[in-house]
Every structure is written in structure tokens, then in C-alpha cells.
Length: 69
Image 1 (cartoon, one colour):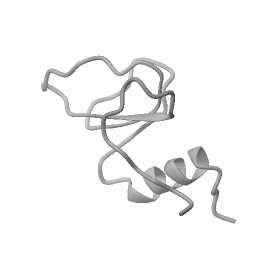
Image 2: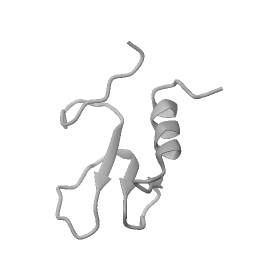
Image 3: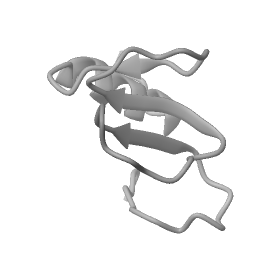
Image 4: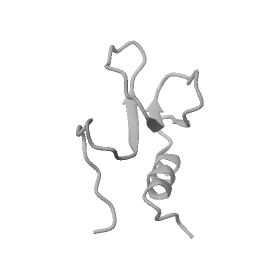
């Protein structure tokens, strides 16, 4: 297995991708390396739209060290 996606495990030091929707309250995700959202970002975390499937897939593969060639 080259890649496993999990939800939760906030105490484990693994790369995190935050998924959020505008107007929905949520707990803070510290250390997120990417974000999927329908709202613009106001920080340095790369943010992808929900419909940017290629961008999201590329980010996940890059974070896993499995970049497409």
C-alpha cells in the first residue's frame, strides 16, 4: 500500500489536509499543509476548490511522495 487516507487521529504527527465550508463552524486544524474549501484563504496554506479534483489529487500525491511523472 503506497497511500492511506484517514480521518481524525489529531494526536498523530501526520500531514493534514483541512476540509472546510464557508459559514460552517469547525475546530481549528493546526499544522494543515493544504486545504479544500469553498472560501478564499487568508493565510499561506495552499487552498483548493471542491471541484479542483486534479489539483487535490496532485497535492495528495505530492504530500505522499508519489508525484505524477
